[in-house]
Image (tube, rainbow, N blue to C red):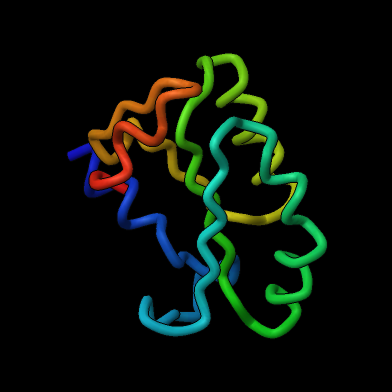
Amino acid sequence: MKNFDALDRLGRHKDKNKTTDLREHNLLVLAPHADDEIFCIPHGKYYESKGYCITVLYLSGSIHRYLEAKKSCKILEWTYIDAKDLGQQYIDGMFHQNLPNL
């Protein structure tokens, strides 16, 4: 059930009454660590102004940093997904070992 919840958030538009086709107008930000989304804010905001839904996929981080990342996404009005929600476990510095799973 947890995996479904995470996938359900992908492409969710901040306007709950507006539907979004998951094949178009979505931008997925891959953040190796919680807080790395800050490097994408200018680009994300640009695409958001063009009608895109922004989703950040966090690959690793402690529970404390993940909670901070959730707050960041709430402020930015972006959707978040933790790789753990998708059944993936990534260890910092070892991403290259799991590239086929990405």
